[in-house]
Length: 173
Image 1 (cartoon, helix red, strand yellow):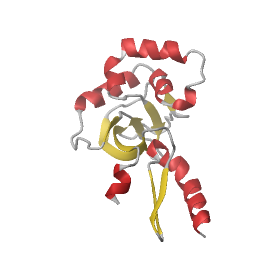
Image 2 (cartoon, helix red, strand yellow):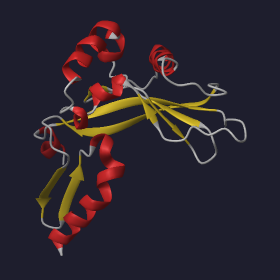
Image 3 (spheres, helix red, strand yellow):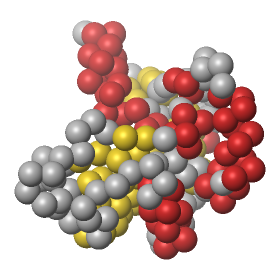
Image 4 (cartoon, one colour):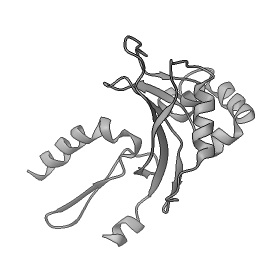
C-alpha cells in the first residue's frame, strides 16, 4: 500500500548501538543508566522544571550529539555484557553504512558518567524502525476489507506492541 504510506506522517529512524564483551564474574551494573542527553531526548521528561536549561547546555556543550540524536543508555544483559546506545537519524531513506564517529561520540559520552571493568566492544549494529512524525504513537489503517496495517511504533515497539495488538484484534473480532 505505497499510496497509503505516502500520505502518512511516518518516517524511518536509523540507530546505532554497541555491546561490550561480558564483564568479569561477580561484577554487576545493577539498574540501567542514562544521563542528561537522555533527559533531553524523551518526551517523558518534558515536565521537568530544569529541562529548558539542560537543553540549552546540551546544545552548547554537545552540538555533534544533538545533530545526530545521540543519547546514551547503558544496560546489562543476562550474559553480563553491556548494551550501549544510541544515535538517531530520521528520513525516508537511511544510510546502510554505520559511522564510527557516532560510535566514538556514544562511547565518549558514556565515559563521562559510567565506569565498568571493560568497555571493549564485541558487537556493533544498527536498527531501523518506523516513527510517526506528528506525535502519535502508532499508525493503524484498514485500506481494504480484511486488511489492517499497523506501523509507526517508533522506539516504543517493545513497550506498546502487545497492548496495541490486543486493541487492534479486539476491534476486528
